[in-house]
Length: 161
Image 1 (tube, rainbow, N blue to C red):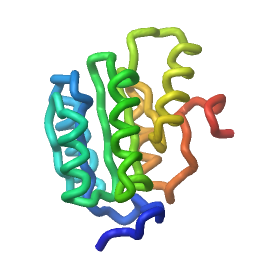
Image 2: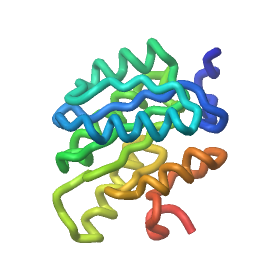
Image 3: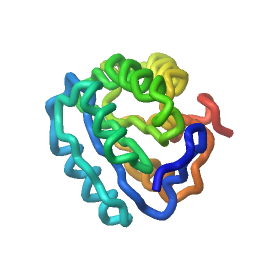
Image 4: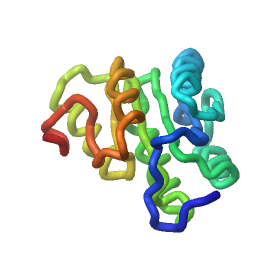
């Protein structure tokens, strides 16, 4: 059953989750880890694999109507590639409210201020949550919660208290 356009879907209670990388990321172990974590939590997972073009993510999201889309990056281009992906998905009326999260190595800078700006830009582009590299427990808490407000997990300065 699909949610009405404009109705925010809850990720609580399982459902289908699409797991993907950004178009430039060829890593797969992160996707396997996420798939296993999500399946353990009771979700049906569609793993699109590495180097997924934005158009394919869009097509698969429209086809499967996921309860959540999880984007993972290991190559450090998650920020730059994620901006376009979020806008592509959010520009489609059928996906404008589908929960969308991104995590991993989102940039190449270790500077907290740079990483915070990148996370804020990803949230502005349409991601519901941003998880820095190594924050899988924050992702688990996000999935266990009842749709928290958009936030950078683990960093109160970017929209949480």
